[in-house]
Length: 221
Image 1 (cartoon, rainbow, N blue to C red):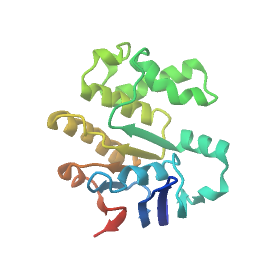
Image 2 (cartoon, one colour; image 1 turned 180 degrees about the vertical axis):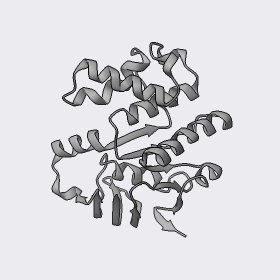
Image 3 (cartoon, rainbow, N blue to C red; image 1 turned 90 degrees about the vertical axis):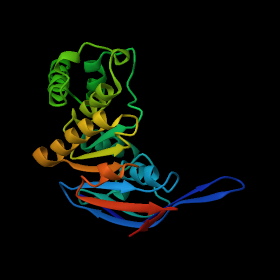
Image 4 (cartoon, one colour; image 1 turned 90 degrees about the horizontal axis):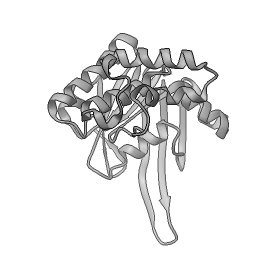
């Protein structure tokens, strides 16, 4: 599903050159749940952003679903990202002035979908994450765990093949974290969604199919 070959990322300023990723090669199979671990600053989020087509590698090859990203331009990459990738962030990134259901609808605004269908799809996604009774609430009325459930619903509303999760349990206590992890495991096992998760939590990582560790931008055993 995702193939990275010799991916490197270098950030440059006028005076400093920083190697964020150093020749990382990973093959992620369709339906796999992969976790990525490593200390802060080791390149985990950079790697996830490259997989999510948010950032470009300095060197190396990236393909998703058998298609090389080099074959796409800016507009087609945005379309591909919207249709095939779902994103979950540690800090939720919800819009406080919008209701829960309106937050979940957001990715569908970039598709040719009627308002009626958008609402139906958003409600179905919220039911999946156990928020049937919170659709008209606003983010400020939710707990941290509920906010992350909304973020997951927003990530899956467009039925993506791949979910990229950056520290999805990082801001939650252990009980809420386990609940969020159970939702992700359910999506992976029942719907065969491919999931790549960055985490600092060894216990959460052990629940996934495979664990990859990074250190100073390099892949380690």
